[in-house]
Image (tube, rainbow, N blue to C red; front, side, top):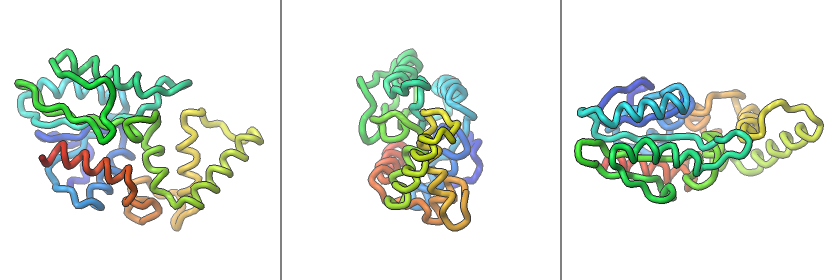
Length: 215
């Protein structure tokens, strides 16, 4: 797969940021996925939604995948809010969405002159969260649990400044700071085995990509 996160081809996976792009590249390599699609880093959720809206009408687009965090609204994140955003965009083109995301990733078949659409909501199509919530189960459990403990202790001593919605980021990056070569980017943490790819959530994500782009 191309290392370029600005792919413009007929089968494209839209992601919010560079971390998403590099994590997905690493997972594709680990699961030996066929190089049939590219990734486009949109620079945030609003830009992703705008790009999706534009791409659906392009005649040379066959398949669009969407990977979105579900960390909105900030005070009380709710996956249903993100689902309604996507439903609002896609229903205008005639797509019919289920009432809720499918557990193994949603795939909407080709509709007239519009492309096949795939939707994955971080972390697991059920719980609100973000990329770091998707990756935490891939960490070594004893070390991760101690990282959680350390973050909790820091919170209790009023030493933290992160927003509650970003707690998983604080925990995961604490965990990664204890690995060989502390502070590696998330994608490199997969290739270096600081995070293990063979967890059910990673396997489900890889299977969704395969269903969407290779079936």
